[in-house]
Amino acid sequence: MKKTNAARLLDRLSIEYAVRTYPIQDGEHLEAAAVARLVGMRPEQVFKTLAARGDKHGVLLACIPADQELDLKKLAEASNNKRVELVQLKEVQALTGYVRGGVSPLGAKKSYPVYVDQSALDLPVMAVSAGVRGAQLVLAPHDLVQAVQATVHPITRRLPDASELEI
Image (tube, rainbow, N blue to C red; front, top):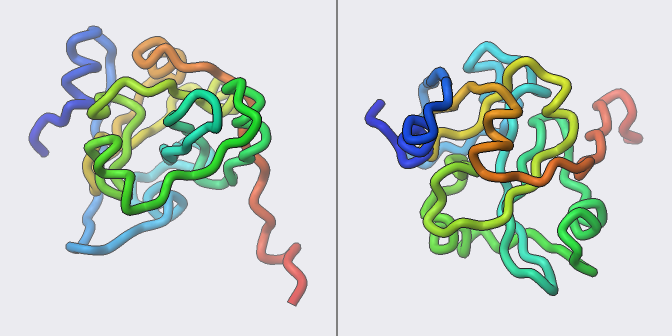
């Protein structure tokens, strides 16, 4: 894998990280939990990065574990917005410079505020996208927080298990 902007940023900051790659087909989109399996990590360690827009403060990035769902109300509270909504998929690349499945909180086209779910701080290591589909950067959570000057806050809700869903 050639160096991505995300990896170059970590290099510039002298932050240790490892790269884990996984196979991906052109046009294929993998859910974060599938990516976790492919890189040999638990879903709560692999964080997906979602682009959102607040009604007061504009675009922001939210990093949440693969086994969780973004709670927009909690994100709005954390970011001092009244309301937050996910940006439309067609806007993601223009805003961040990254394609769906490759959005990283590191090295985006523009510097947006980053919100990391509080659960990250309970982990020895976490993974975030390297900025391309098929590669994850594994690093210490406090190093990610430092690198992007993230706000750490509870911003998720647990996804229901299949056994909990009514059919």
